[in-house]
Image 1: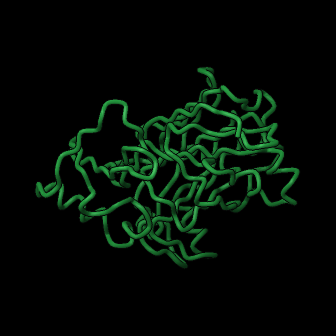
Image 2: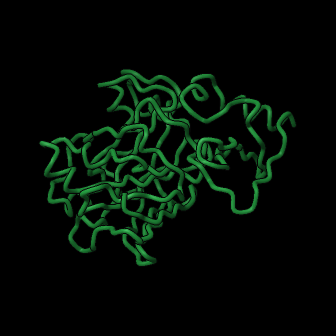
Length: 282
């Protein structure tokens, strides 16, 4: 099952795709956010769609795709979760998951215009697998419990400003991660039963030139490892989003130039869809 939204920013229609057919989910929820997941919205949508209780949806030609997920209570990120990316960042692979947080207003649609922050010289791209928490998770005891807490998955671009992240943050990364719109999500949220997070290709391009090309099998910490670890330090809530790290091939490596106004970034994850952002100066 897929969740997605269509329409102008702030007035998107929530849509669910079941067995290849698109349905308007407005009668069930206004957005696919924390309240939706906490109330068992996925099961309700599936039941109503299969029972013929939802109207079919046909998007207008050229309609904007919004973020498939409403703003979360928490947007948690994992750093250096691919060994080659850790190496290009000048670090050894971590022994435990490294975490930082992004502000919820960084969430944007998959193809929305993206902004180079004021004063930025080092805006960077990062294709990432995002997971969404479907139930409260605290002090989990096994990977199996962690897997059960994951509602599904989404493509994310963990946009970053490296000078803000490294030189201005005093050892904490978030200053370089929290500009508005710095977390484009989508085009789809795909439920956990329809996606294998352990073997999916991740790719990115800048102005049509390949940058990243890897597979989630190269993660240091699996999605289950991440959720299990996080649950020992915080209570994860329904609708929380966790970005699970990026592979090598970013500008921070020194092999590629940083982004400038007019550049176009495209990212995709096999089975989850593709994004495209054109960058302008803020």
